[in-house]
Image (tube, rainbow, N blue to C red; front, side, top):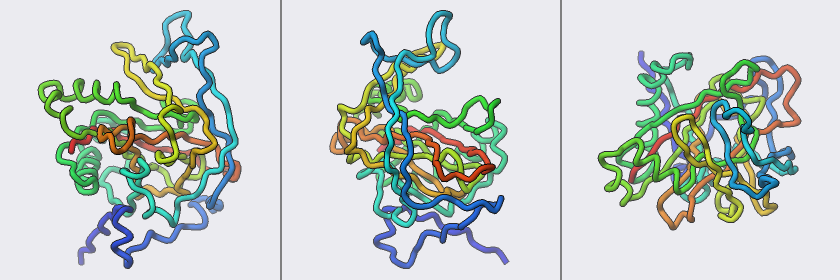
Length: 303
C-alpha cells in the first residue's frame, strides 16, 4: 500500500485550517541530548562602522594583498530571542519577511554533489515557492550555500547580523540572471527569497535567528560592498536597535523550511522588504551536541 506524503502547509494558512497542527517537537536529539526550547538571551553581532568613516566593504574570497577581509567592525549586544515554535502561523513573508513550512519531503539526502543538488533539490524548491507564495509565476534559483560547523568547511555559520541583498543588488540580480527579459521583469513585483533548512536536524548548535521586519527601521540598515573576484555586489549590515524583535525556530528538523525574504520591490512592504538574520550561539546548547549543517537556496521570485 502506498502512503501519500503529508502535504506541506504554509504557516499563513493555518488560521483557516484549525484541524492542522505543527508536529509535536521532540525533547531530545538522536544523541539523547535535550533540545533547547523557549526564549533565550544570547549575544548577537551588529554593525560597527569603519573607524575612518569610509564606505564599508567585505571580500567574499581572499582579499588583495594589503587589504582586510572587511573594513568594518562588530558590536555585540545581549538580545532576547523568542521561540516561534508553536506560533508559526502568526508570521508571514508579507508581514514579517519570514515564514515557516514543515513536513516537506525531499528526494535529495546527501547534499555533497552540487550538480545533483541542482538536478534534484532545485526543482523541489521551485515547486515549493510557486505553491506557497501567492502571485508567484516565475522562479529563478541563482545559487545555494551549504554551511557546516567543521573547521575545514568552506562555509561555516555566519554569526553576524546581515541581510543578503539591498534594493540595488536585487535589481542587479535580475539583470544578471535574466538579461534578455530584465527590464520587463523589473516593472513588476520581484522578490528575493532564501529557502533555509538543516541537513542534520534537529538543530542544536548555531540556530538561525531572524528579526521581525516590522520592527526593523530602514535607518538601521547599512549597505556594504560585497566584493567578488569578478564583480561587486551589495549586502547590508544592521545596527543594533532595542526595538528589534528576534526569533528562532527551536529544534528545526530536516523536513522544516524557513523562508527568508531578503528583498521585495512592493513598496507597501517598506523600502527594503527584508529580514535581518544571523546564526547565534545558544548558551543552553549541551556539550557534545552535533554541529549544525544547513543549506540555503536563493531565489528570484517574480509576481
